[in-house]
Length: 574
Image 1 (cartoon, rainbow, N blue to C red):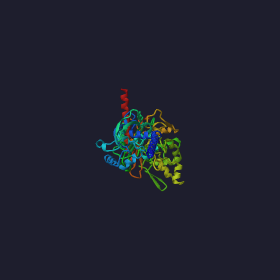
Image 2: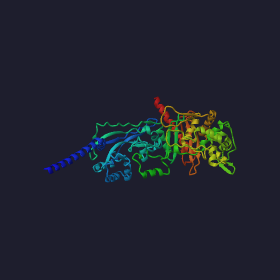
Image 3: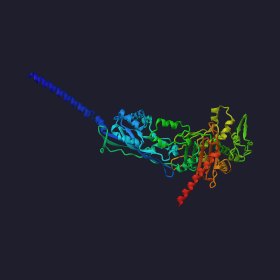
Image 4: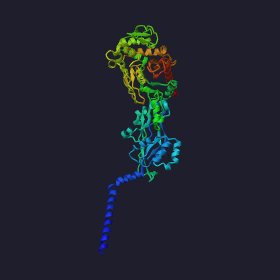
C-alpha cells in the first residue's frame, strides 16, 4: 500500500512539474515574448506590398509631354521562400545573371519583403512565368508605372534617365527602398525630389505556402503620392528641327536660348542615347557598349565639352579694347599678309586681308589684326574685361554636370608656364585658341551681352516667374559698335551663309583648331534685328569651317523658330 502511495506521489509530482514547466513556457511565449511571435506570425500571414508612385511628368514650353509613365510588368522575389531550383529557372527565363539577382534580393533585410529583380519583362516571359508559377516558389509578377521617354535620343541629355539604386545608395538614402528608381543626369537628377513621389503600401493576407488570399481590410493602406509635374522652357519641335539639320554630322552641340530672359529653347548634344533602355536595368555588357563607344553618347557636349572658342572670341577682345578707350573703330595695325612674325615664330592668318580697321577685321575675321590688338591692350585688359561675361565659371544652369572651362589670365600663365611666358600666349588667346576653353552654353550666355544690350542672363530650363540678370559695367557705346559689326559679319562677311531675307541676323563665325583631327566649326547668331528673340550657339565637331558648316545651319534654326513664332502669334490673334 505504501509502495503504491509513493508511486502515485512520484507520478503526481512529475505531472505537476511538467504542468508548471508548460505554464511557465506558455507565459513566456504568450505574455513575455507574445509581441515578438505575434509580429513573426503577422509577417508570415501578412505581406506588405509596395505600390510604386508614378514620377511626375515633364512638359516642354508648349505643354507637350516629353517624359511620362507607362505600365509594365515586373518580377519580384521573396527570399524566405525561393529555392536554388527556382532561382536557376527564373534567371534563365529572364536572361539575367543569377548571382546578380541573388546579390540584389539579399540586400533586403526583411526576408518576407518582395524584391524586384526584373522590370518591363516581355509578354513572352510573362506567359512562361504564369504557366509555371506553381513551381516557381517565392516568385511574384505585378504591374508598375515605368518611366517613358516619347522622344528617345532627341532629348536624352536634357532629360537624363532613371535607373535602379546602387548598393551604396540603398544603404545611404533613407527615403528610398530597394525597389525604387532614382533620376540620373539632366532634369531627372536635378529635380529628383519633385519628380519622385512617395510609394504606397497595401497589406495582403497569404497562406502557409505564401500564396495571396486577399487584401486585409482591417489594416488601412498607405496611399500613393504621385510625383510633381515639371514644366520646362525647352521647345521640342525646334529641337527636332535642329536634329534634322545636323543629321549628316556625327558629333555636335547646340544651345538655343531667349536672350531676353535666359530661357533655354534647345539643349542638344549629338550623339545621344535612348533613355528608355535604362528602364529594365542595363546588363554589364550593355553598359560597356554605351561607355566604350568612341563618340561618347552619354556625354553632354552642350554643358560638359570645353572647346577653344576660336574667332567667336574676337568680338570680346575688341569690346575690351573699346571699353578701355584704348582704340577707336578706325584703329589699324600692320597690313595682314597672311602671316605675322613674332621673333622666330610665324603666326598665320587664314587669308591675306591687307590693311584693315576694326570693323572689317571682325567682319572678315582677320587673325593678324587680333594678334596685334591683343598685344596692344595686354593680358590684364583682356582678362579683367572678359571675366565679367562669365568665362571661366559655371553659368549656374539648373542642370547637373556643367563644366566651368578656363579663362587664362596673368596668374594662370605664370603658374603654368613660369615667369617667362610669352607674347605668343596672348596671340593665341586673342583669336580664341590656346588655353582658353568654354562650353557652348558659356559661349551662348556671353553673347547675350550683345543681344541684350549689356545684360547677361542666367540660363535656366524650368519655367520661373522671376528671371535673373547681371548688368555689366561695360560701355553701352562699345557694345553698340560691336553689335553693328556682328550684323555686318552676316550681311557681308564670313557669316553670310546665315543671312535670311526676311530677318536681320547678327553673329560670328569660328573655326577651332583641333590637334586630334579636323577643325571644329562654330557659329553664334541671334535675331531678328536689335530686339532678338533667339540666340543660337552651334558647335559641329571635326566638320571644318564655321562659315561654311555652322553658319548655314544656325540660319535655318533661327528661321524655323521665327516662322513658328509668327504662326503662333497669327493663330492667337485669330
